[in-house]
Each structure stands twice: as structure tokens, then as C-alpha cells.
Amino acid sequence: ISFWRLVFQFPAPILLALLLNEMPEGKCKKLYQTVYTFPHFLSWVVVGTLITNLLSNTGTINLALKAMNLPQVEFLAEKGLARPLLYITANWKGMGWSSIIYMAAISGIDPALYEAATIDGANRVQRIVHVTLPCIMSTIVVLFILEVGNIMNNGFEQIFNVRNGVTKSTLDILDTYIYDITFEAMPNFGFSTAVGLFKSVCNLFMLIVANLTVKKISGQGLFGGGDD
Image (cartoon, rainbow, N blue to C red):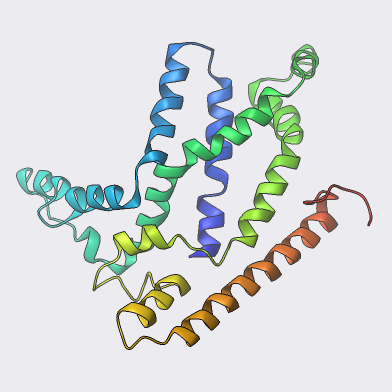
């Protein structure tokens, strides 16, 4: 789950920031920014309820499929759909808020760089690839390292409010495991504390490894570039 979150969720706010940056200033751009940012302020309890109302057997989508004489889909009871549903809903809820950091980094780029690229014949895509991305690469690197360092935190609130008896084994992570052994069975606070400490140590280890690896490849890290 953590690996595919990096693959599907980490690039999403970068792509959204690049797309919004290419829009002309105006009400339409502000509307899109508001629409994409608003879901961040909804709790996962609310989002989980919306998902249930939309995708359950008696939800809006299945009722629409039934009305069109199409076969219904067990969205919430199909293990193969459980994890993709996580990534889609997490992107819907969080990518607008996360893109603010990248948009702030983009706003700090010298306009003269774009003018020079345009004079040299660069089109819009080439300006993004050769000007925008290199200029915000330090921001991307730092956030990527922090994301890897947080890799053991798979989003407990989201999974806890989305999982059910059928998909529980597919969506089981360390946080839900700690919750289960602490509150849903005979309490074992010592063991659950040990598991939580193990998770924190793993996060620290991944943070250090990611920082050293990225610094070796790109020369940039959490504490700047260059040799230590």
C-alpha cells in the first residue's frame, strides 16, 4: 500500500500544480483551486460515509446501473477494488491541498526564464520540462524524502473508515493491527507499544536511507546539496 501510494499519490499534486499554473489568471482558475482544495477540510468519517452512500449495493451508482439494466458492481466487497479505491479517494481529498506547496514554489520562478525559453522556441510542454520542473526540483526532493520517511503511516483514518469485513485483510496495515490488538481483543498494551515503536524506527530508517539515496543521485537532500 505504501509503495503504490508513492507511485499514484505523490505525483498527483505536482501534476495538478503544473496544470493550474498553466491556466490564465481569472475566476475559472480560482474556482478550480477552491474545488480541488475543499475536500481536504472534510474528515475521513464524512468521506467514508460518502463512499458508502455512492458505492454500496444500495448506493447511488448501483441504483443508476440497475435503472439502466446494467449489472451491479460490488465496489465495497471486491478485494481487487479496495486498494485502488484508497488511492483514488486519497488523491481526491488531498492533492489540492498538497499542490499549494508546489504552486508556491512555482510562483517564485523568475519570469525571465520563461521569456528566454519562449524566445528560444520552447513550447508550453518544453517550458514545463526544462524550466518549471528543474526550478521546483528541490521542493519535490524534500517532500519525496519526507513522504518516504512517513511510509509506515499508511493513512489509518482513511482505511479505518473504508474497510469492512470483506476487505479487512486486504487493507490491514500496522496502525489497524495495533488498533485491533489494543481495542478489539484482549488488550496487550506492552506489545502494541512495541509495535508502534518498531514502526517509528522503520520510518526513521527509511527517512535516512531516502535522504542518502536521493542526495547521492541528485546532489540534493533535506539538509542541502554538496558533500558532507
